[in-house]
Length: 542
Image (cartoon, rainbow, N blue to C red; front, side, top):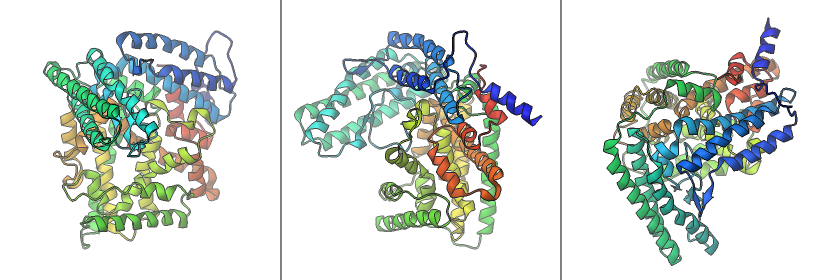
């Protein structure tokens, strides 16, 4: 029976049959991938990406030709890692298909037109739907060289025309997307104001173009706000579309209903375990947040050293040269004012958030040891990587708790369950917004009310910023926990396979070396076994 089930699962994971002769060459998949990536980007007309109705309709018509080319490639006889690549390409094709059929961010989401970013994302690619040609200000060193000033100016000159195009392209009726998209564009305006001060001694043309970009941004905000009273629709994609997206794009072996059940369970578990930790620690003093910049820097530096030493001494993770500087670069600055949610945690024990900062290990590996596979070398599109990046980083927090990292600081153990509760609460907001059961404001209120200690404040920025991202990018908010539990299942599978031969350090080395791909495919690749739930998810039927 076991053999029969495995054969069925393997058959289900194969691509659909086609009538024309099929290729069995992996090189043909790589060639298709390169062509696809060139096609996926919008055409650029006079320096401006073209998201007009005609351009998008033309792009949508061409997607089928790439799907046909992919279906004509038969990976059945390939090694598992190459079969995984076939499914990664199919997921990207499905992502663009979903964008055209459902999300249509260029038409429905004003935040899509935000293209100026002052800080680096901790993800392989910026979160959520983003337009082509963004300006990553954090990559520029000021004062600018003549060449870098020219490059920045070139990007800025496109903004007024791009935002004028937005006024024609944007026709959606989702009120939450319009309200919070206008807020994001106001943040872009603030970034441009700050940029103007930084280039005040630069070329005159650059200063003029910064101001024109800001004026265009402000004009679009004004136009959006004039339109908002007429926007009455919901902004979620609906449960049926959410299920399709989970299966075909995010490659998550769950349905919307499965994920609701998972999040409710994790939310209850987080609150219950927090209560037990607090009961256990009731005789200990409460943790006090850091009080000043000097204390903050001292504790942060000590936390980095202690964290990396723990990983090394307990043979949990191979330590690479880039890891220490990558973490220390994330120190940030102490701020004495009202604290956001993650600051409440970080100021009590900075080592906790360092565990989640596995993201910077991932980015360091991409920069210093690029994946040899061209399909995995760069970031996957449509945030397809999130169960691996956000899911593993979230799971790593609790793994390090159970590995003993916080045994000497029992109150810190409480923080891990505060974090888990917040992730589960906001994920339920993601799910219910997309089911059109909650508005964004209602989802924010739910997340705030279900996060312990009142730290996810409604009068702060985090709670709504998170829900806005999840409304734009289905399944992002749930990936922290769905990815976590899939990583746990993978770890369990490998311990069962290897028995006494299992080594956490070796496991993590293989885990990282596989690249930033969905955990469902990572489990297939690292174990060599295709679980039935993953096989069902990979099956070609709609």
